[in-house]
Image (spheres, rainbow, N blue to C red):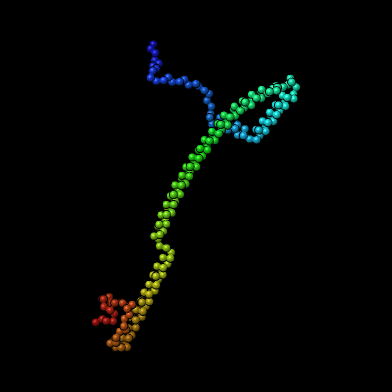
Length: 206
């Protein structure tokens, strides 16, 4: 039976063998490391550690020789403290890296919000400037009041002219009856300027 394996190529490096390591949840391990680092950074940990070391010294110094499990030079205690330090340093670094990642994400979010606020501020500034330019072309309250007052004065003058014209038109027939119809009309006022529908002045017909 022929060998069905894939032939190896000499122009390509051989793929390294991957070791199958146990898998774990990085997020859970990170939370666990942060909890340890947070606990080691408190005053309670220092106090408890001091009490344990003091009790260790007292027991292995004052207790009977047959009950001492770590006599003077305290080799076992030194080993325990070394192990604690060797594990505490990586855990603290891991917790610091996770905190740095969170800080970086927070800074990016703050930068994004700052850029959005800057864009909104610039947009509002442009809108306010456009509104100011538009308001410059809109009639103000004082201008409207002055125009309304001027129109009211013109209407009053027109009403006065109309009332004088009506009063004169009512007085002319009476004057004609008293003067036999041959009397001269009252001189016309420049403001009266009223003509008949056929284009001739009133009182000058015929």
